[in-house]
Length: 427
Image 1 (cartoon, rainbow, N blue to C red):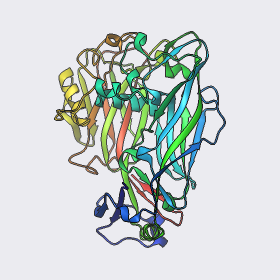
Image 2: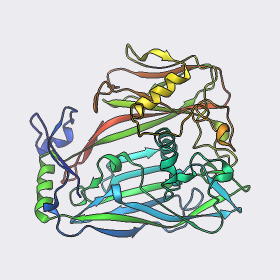
Image 3: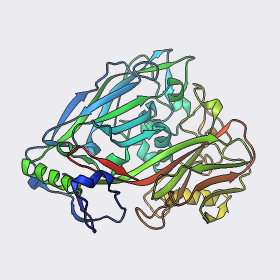
């Protein structure tokens, strides 16, 4: 099945000559949406395995960046059903345990084309991934997804998967918004693209193990699901590009870690987006960074004696009354993550870990004070325009030494693909 979305603008579109100077508006609406179209298949869908461009082994202390070249003159790539596989082992020391799932290996993941246009740039990738996961999936999901080591999340250190000198396999789909929402990369139109993975320091990735343990990753390959397209359809897509009608709509984010050790703390959310949809916040201790004996990724510190948590945007406050009580904060997180009214939804957050005292070895001593705040007024592209006024996030609570706050701002993005090499993104 192929997912194709072709969009036409309500108002007149620019010509190819002034495309670079044209600012894509957020009032675009789809006039044609093809969710399944077997007519344009030129052959059977197939899988193609490719190796990364760099030599193994990989880790934060060895070859740190792995890239995969994605290209085809006549096939689209189904990224939503393409996976990356490899083997992980301990190369220094005797054993260790991952802090989270296999995504914890990567501190940054990027998708870009050969001209340098960034489709997506996920800084602090492993932190964002694990915070989203503990807030939006439950134990049953984790148990049923052992391929990416989800069953290693939210368990005591003694019950985690032990990594030794004997390689253990993994397979995962990169957690990119483009992959989740757009699914298909039309390579004959976009041209060659690159998927880039940057490995994190082993001391951040490992939450327990023998002193000085370091990991190593080998046999890194990508299993690409390829969809052959007819020459006629490729021609139609290129014509759509020339008219400025070939768009990818998805969500990006920006991260911003700042000190948070005072009783009153405020951070300015950077400007530059016109539809800020949500804010994910987590708190961590600087003493947990690069510490093999501490959970760093799968942990968010509770603010003791919390009296106020609120966002200020221009003259408006979100919410109108500051949040201070635990049930209200938990409700706000569930509402933003879509779980509040979902009877089948689940989460790894609970009454104990949401506000527990800091620790590392057991579940009851692993705080998961993850806060999601919704910024949209209604649906997509109804978020806050940060170009019009500054947004502030602030809290009032007891001071905590060595505490840092990390915000993840989610915002709408439009990527306008042009076959003549003038692809651009608008936020």
